[in-house]
Amino acid sequence: MKLLVTGGAGYVGSVCAAHLLGAGHEVVVLDDLSTGHRDAVPTGATFVEGELGAAAGDVLAGGRFDGVLHFAARSLVGESVEKPERYWDGNVVASFRLLEAIREHAVPRLVFSSTAATYGEPDQVPIAETAATRPTNPYGASKLAIDHMMTSYANAHGLAATSLRYFNVAGAHLGDGHRLGERHAVETHLIPLVLQVAAGTRESISIFGDDWPTPDGTCVRDYIHVDDLADAHLLALEHATAGRHDIYNLGSGHGFSVLEVVETCRRVTGHPIPAVVAPRRAGDPAVLVAAGDRAAEQLGWKPSRTEIERIVSDAWEFTRHR
Ligand code: UDP
Image (cartoon, rainbow, N blue to C red; front, side):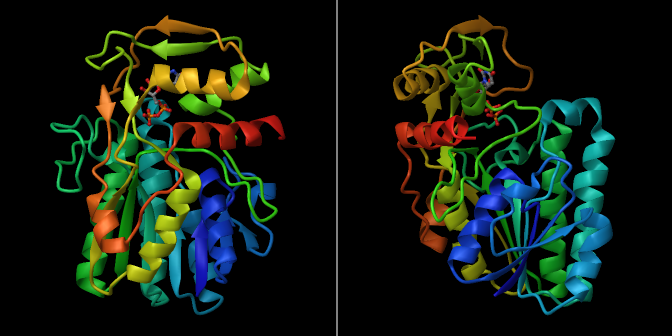
């Protein structure tokens, strides 16, 4: 297939682009490099530097595309609370322009990078796709708004639309001559922050609360390897059906606590990694774990890199050799 990958210079987008190329697809990456990196665009992809809302139409006009994988987004929860306008504009308005370009150029498929943040504080864990969507910040709300737009375009215009709701993406893609991992200018995610301590660029890791209602008192999250996540995107492309909007949670169904993650990082890196208990972070739910049955049953997706040691060692390999 000929595919447009928006945000293909970012972490998840670049890894998915590498998997798509590996599977023999033709890939055009569109990225404004606001948070991505030019050298993360995998070899073999055509790169177009441009802002999503402004450039998507021109790119899609330039050839018959079979699908779009849409990763370009603003994704900092805290920033979304402080500066919501960036999220309504950068995520919702820009994605609307993309959808209009998709409609104008009759692109049949769209796979979207959605998030577990669309659910907000869950009533029940593990979280199924049927759970209520009550995002607790503008980031999650903006992603949910895009999901709603996609449903309406599937119904009205026959788009084959799929939203993949990621839980905690981690690890790195190390195969096929590429080394692609997390390198955000503003890092907020647990595993890369802990590994910064092991790499000597940060003194200690703060543990945001140790009095949560969990077995060891720290928050529990469902960490999914970025290569498993990419596999799901390829399956989603294959299974996309005209006139339907399908939503799938992507997680392993198994949770690890913050302390378990820190201890795993100590084992993998051999570094003592000093940890300091800090106050709870606003908006953090105690436990977020996916019920992954729908992706397993309907896409045939089964994550295979679910060991936390594996996820952390790949991230560490990436961090060490950057
Ligand atoms: N966390 C932490 N210290 C940090 C960063 C994160 O204790 O410096 C915790 C955070 O409170 C959450 C978990 O680690 O319980 C995962 O956070 P992350 O930001 O990686 O992902 P989120 O679950 O917020 O999407």
